[in-house]
Length: 346
Image 1 (tube, one colour):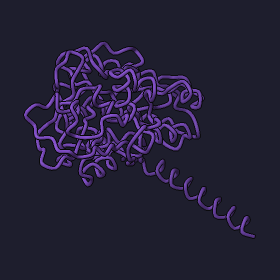
Image 2 (image 1 turned 90 degrees about the vertical axis):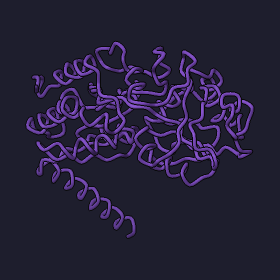
Image 3 (image 1 turned 180 degrees about the vertical axis):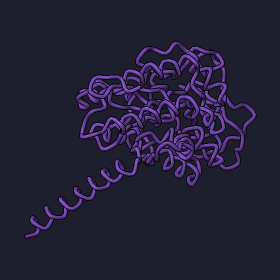
């Protein structure tokens, strides 16, 4: 009896979900899901876009990829390109369209310290490995001479969900600390050696703000919006760099490959901030799937075209780096390769 009731409830829930998606299609609402890293920018962009409504769910890159795989959204967004396993699960070619580049900053809550600390990549990785446990440790004191650091335990905060922000952060740590690379490596979700988990950029920021001694990592816009302190990070040239639009732009000022999938952490540019990354909108190359109409596919392509052109005006006010001319050109070429029944849409 209970089994029958549960099955009926499941059918009702599935029907409701399908109705929601159908309603979205009928009322011209495009559906997106993924990165929390880009959410402040997307919120602004989509509030200004008038050609169609956009419902974007800030649920993390991993969850956004899962939604695109299940074909329940028109586009996903991820701060890391699809890996081989994710690509195979998609079952069809997926395009990566760069939307912007941004910085991941190291936030902290140290009572009595209200200036930007200097942190090296090695020391930052050792903190997350659980090897450096006090704020007044010799390693931190060495790069912060003249700063009165308290004898306070460091509380490590990391993401609990599959996260492109985590990939950017761990990709950087893997490049600058061999022990991290061998023991933990990089990924949207890793086996964290220490600390507490928070869901989304919002969750990490909240935990850092309410926990004395905490250290975390957040997209720059979240740190600024929440009035959080964040560290200067040593780049490959040995300089301690503050995360700014100019420093993020410097990190992303590289040759973009044709598929746009590239890592810009630990940049060679001496003026570049070392924990920077592009974020990509993800769409199926062939848009005729799951009963989609050509009109809906066209609306999606128009939205993303607007994002990489007019929408870029929203980047700088929200502390994201606008796409370079070469990145825009690459994005245009990628969007023009999208098809419906094998024919170009744009």
